[in-house]
Image (cartoon, rainbow, N blue to C red; front, side, top):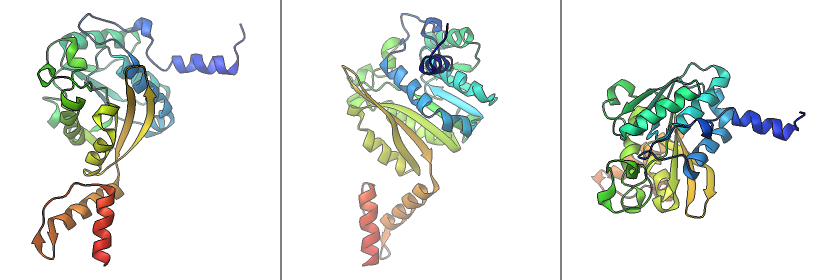
Length: 267
């Protein structure tokens, strides 16, 4: 049977990601859904950059079914990168399911039952070149955060930020100098505020995929260390700590506030 170029391209693309029929499952593990597919599509959209990036260590925090870490491994297999893969999940059932999904696709990763990266901070410090995270981002009552079982996959507390705000400092410690973070967020999580928060730590960012479903508006944000951003952030913090030799009250960091500081000095 002869295939059109579009059909052939579609089949080629499917070979680079996890096949749903091969993804394992468990009643207490979050099955791949719109957010999982959006994150995989974002990785595919950034595929050329990822292949050129040639990461040595790739990590998924909150691996769930293993769909995303498997797709990343399949995508990078094209260049035989020799990357080492690590996946973590607080749900022990997710650890087993992820292992089964990886094995069904002929992939391998070190899969650990831990909270975010507990116990790995020293070992992986400044070493992770690509990190992918589909966190619990749904706004829920605070008492639901970190509960046992499948609810741990989505319960994000107030504004859905409770777990995200725990993950970002950990990511900052683990990402290498060339490290990239791909993060799934919801509009309710205030993605702009997250970008400004990471900017203070020297990260540039952009939304590489935005998708609206019947229930939510998803944003996949890519963060990376950027020297110019870091210098700007350090300059702002320096200006903020002292003015005419006197300590000043800390102000929220925004690009506009940095502009105002610079112009005040010029005057």
